[in-house]
Amino acid sequence: MQLPKRKSNRLKHYDYSQNGAYFITVCVKDGRELLGKVVGGDDHSTPYVLLSEYGMVTDKYIRRITGINQYVIMPNHIHMIILIDSHENGTMWASSPTQPVPQLIKSLKTLISKEIGCSIFQRSYYDHVIRSEKDYEQICQYIDTNPLRWTEDEYYTK
Image (cartoon, rainbow, N blue to C red):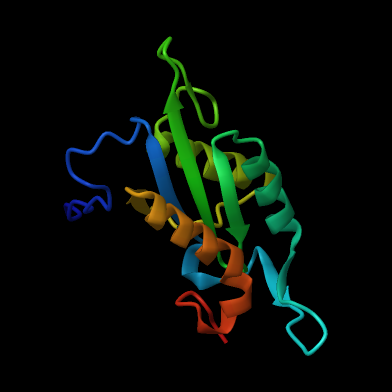
């Protein structure tokens, strides 16, 4: 029996290695809250994500990628902005310096999975090519305030 071809979530004919900013969302399989939990939010504190052991491993590897300038690890997903900037000599920075976005995400998920001993992420991820300064600023704001809006988040599970 032949399985149906999997539809790609990427933009057709778009070069994900070209200079630009990319908003990426990586989700945990089955929406499981394995990366941490949102705590606080009462009258005296602002909600924040208390990372689990898996969340701390995830954070460690994200911090090693120089092209990620902003991110948030939520209980069952990660939001990040990846910046790709080719230098005049043709080299790039972002993760290991020559990886376009799909390979960078694959490498990140592989490193995390190897360290924790199992694969916790969905096979694919969501991306959005950031095309303007306004778009970039709105996404930064969204990332910064994500823990505040956790119970309204599309990935929130009770």
